[in-house]
Image (cartoon, rainbow, N blue to C red; front, side, top):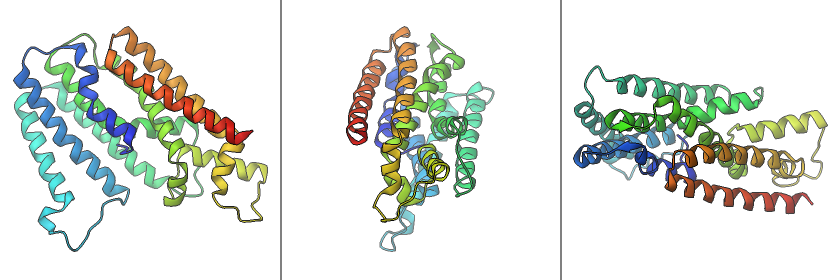
Length: 270
């Protein structure tokens, strides 16, 4: 799961956003579930950071106190709580296995495709965008099973899928330079590389941040920003229909961010 500020903030508020869809009639049960989700979140973010090479193994840190060890402990605590909340035959375990398999398969695919020969399409972007955010379907799906809910898993996917497309595109757009530096192949970067090759764009003066300049001046950045905006518009329709007021407010903040991006893109392009 992406650890950028947008995704992290969204995930930490996920249950708050969708809880109005459920009849929370047992606070103790709900609080136990939230605690399990908190442990689960810490574990998932840590594994994601490990795969991305973002975890340091400082010799000054005692091995037993390392973040990776704590993440394992966190995962165990999460599973223990979840095992008390859901019986062996609960659909929750199928939901968890399905979405977490999607998440880990996505991590593998991301590494396999992270080379100069691969070129992302919009469809492959959607695949990795959903895979990166697949863990979010586990607690949200669990909540729908734990309490009487107004919607089912299919409707939940209809609500969250465009959100994850928009969030991932916004992340790829805003982290363009950092991803170039780290060698991460995103849809935005892939589009720029293809454009440079197709148009024969050269950099004879060795300009700094050359790919980023092409990203903005070619119109690709605007296309990506527009795509994200359309996805948030779809999510907004769903959130309004379901009367998820807190989620609506959060999506509105995303529109402000997209507008800010659009102004910068227009300024740079002109």
